[in-house]
Length: 352
Image (cartoon, rainbow, N blue to C red):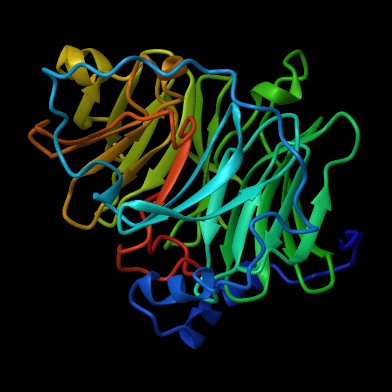
């Protein structure tokens, strides 16, 4: 475990320079890292892991007359985390290749596999980076009364995260030493709890920052000096992702809608859960991921096994894949598809 110490760091361009360090990476996808997780000497339960409570969800009886679109667990190689499930899953070739148990409590919300194969994740009361062999490379515990729900790798050595606090703080951390290189206060309402502040925070390819303010009902974009430059009001934004052509993909928990919003506030595309065919309909929705082929994966906690955990739709809203199986995989708040081109450490390279 590495404790975080705060450093005086007067370098306004530090985050941009960190993003530029992505040039050291060459892998177009993360599939080549998966052999690291298949090593038979990796313990099924490592000393770094913590016991978890048994699942509390029910497994809905299967309907023999219902055939779900897609290939089930074999549809994608992917890394999965979810609220209400304290086990992380790495899936490849239709089977669970690797898991990580992170102890009791709440909650897995954000996860990244890096070009090295190391995994960066948030756990509400702490965040960490762990190797394929389940060795803890870095850990930051949230001070009492604060929470960590979101993080992002920036270059090979830095982590950008938000500490939900009064006020919430965007922090750039050198994970090798635990040193806080930069920190910036963010928009908040002191009458609201820290839990309602932020679920996603992303640096964009342009060097700006997107913050979905869950409790405030708006997505705010900050410039490099951390001054607001764009705001879009929406019910309860859980996630916001800047797409390559400039629109922002937003997940709204309140209206159960995922929408593409242009810079001038026009909704260019959207899909509500109510538009999904009834047998494939998600009960709730948190994050979503835009794939390189234009399809979008919607993630859900799965309603105790009564509803799917993931649905993939085309631009035309055709459902091409439905995953519903709480006997193997838990609720899904976030997914990283490992066959997608793009360097995780390069902001904006992956639309997630």
